[in-house]
Length: 69
Image 1 (cartoon, helix red, strand yellow):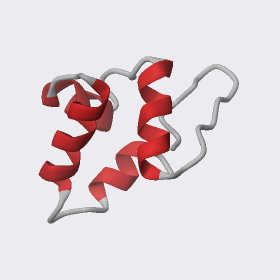
Image 2 (cartoon, helix red, strand yellow; image 1 turned 30 degrees about the vertical axis):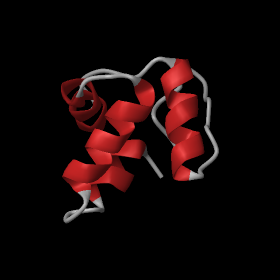
Image 3 (cartoon, helix red, strand yellow; image 1 turned 45 degrees about the vertical axis):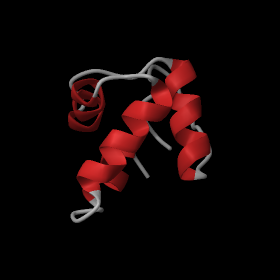
């Protein structure tokens, strides 16, 4: 499941989840919203943190490390 799909599947918890991910990754909420929207991609280190938090494996693929967590 893509990170953006996961976050968008949480309609009532979306804001809280964005804030928690921002806190865990030492990022701004704007950065996390950009990751969710696909405008930018988080660095690999932050992807690993997100994957651990979500309890999902980090999938690193061909041309993209996309945000599959």
